[in-house]
Length: 437
Ligand SMILES: C[S@@+](CC[C@H](N)C(=O)[O-])C[C@H]1O[C@@H](n2cnc3c(N)ncnc32)[C@H](O)[C@@H]1O
Image 1 (cartoon, rainbow, N blue to C red):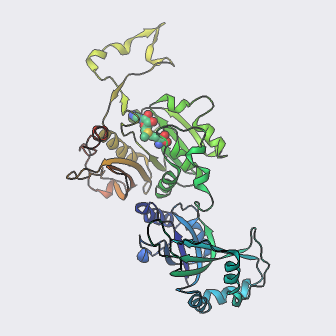
Image 2: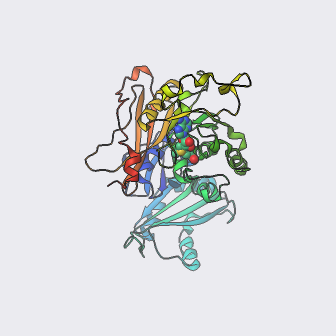
Image 3: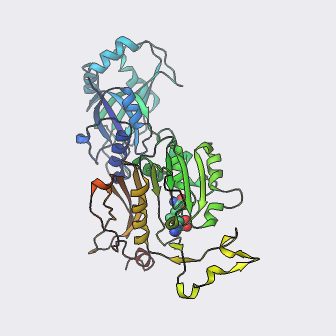
């Protein structure tokens, strides 16, 4: 099938996550993309796709992209841009079939400083006269948006360039989730129920994309806290379910609950439920289908890592038989079970094991893991023989980093390396509180 060229306009942030997001969304929508021209240094990439629908499907959910355009040409000056547009087949094809559609022009720039005045813009628009667009100009909801994108070379980190180095021209196919306002909508500052463990909007949405959370499929967060990942999964249409050992997180504060957040976003239909439960004593029945697991396990910094059980089993012996009014105490609704400390390493082993048993083949597990950036200490990534480690995307802070680890369940035949039981997180909590010294 003949393919057309498209121009992808990305954002230059979270570069360690950008390609993973683009690849995951292409794979999720069955869009075959050749990434060989992808460069981490550039916000632009030209790709060939079969049709506009593919472009739209691919980029609609993206957070680290701005938009995708049907590519009509480029140049180092406006003169060379016009020559390029006139020589492109996309232009001629469009002209014959669509010249009477309503339209407007938009201007975008990257790395530039100066704000263009209206008269310069009008002059630029007029220089495209040869397009012979005969439709009405409509500033609101036009059929087509033609976009001029100027790329400047910034003079320094804070000073943008004055003269564009390159100019692209294209027909807008799809604005990304970011460009349609997802970050503003899910900004934590505006969220009714949040807490110290809430995960910021941008990277939680990116995580949901890399995890390939799917509409009308079940997503589970076993360490749900205030529900940031449920919000992200629900936004992409998943039916979301969460659990947390800390009942206070699940109950919320008065009217402020995870459920109320969904109501606030008008996405209540995506919310299945949340429950108080120790992940390692999981009560979800074994044949309950979970399509995706996305979470932020406890690091032991703002919350402790605990599981059900007695710290000192000898001292606890016999206490399970305690009765109140003739009923076993542990069967009463207000019974608070004893908990014991647990290590992050063991919890991650349990998580990988659980994912390998519960996810469908090709289902994804994605979670965040903290690491100290100590010299001489190699980071060991948890591995399970049924799970393929697909991505390891690092977000660097000064002395520590956290990484989004993404695994695909490949089943028993995969027979990959396994390192369960190994100490990998290097007592992150102690290192954190000692300032990594
Ligand atoms: C980093 S927080 C998750 C924050 C969450 N992403 C949010 O949006 O608020 C980790 C959570 O794991 C919970 N937790 C700790 N041990 C647990 C266990 N054994 N089972 C389930 N949850 C546990 C903590 O109570 C805490 O809420």
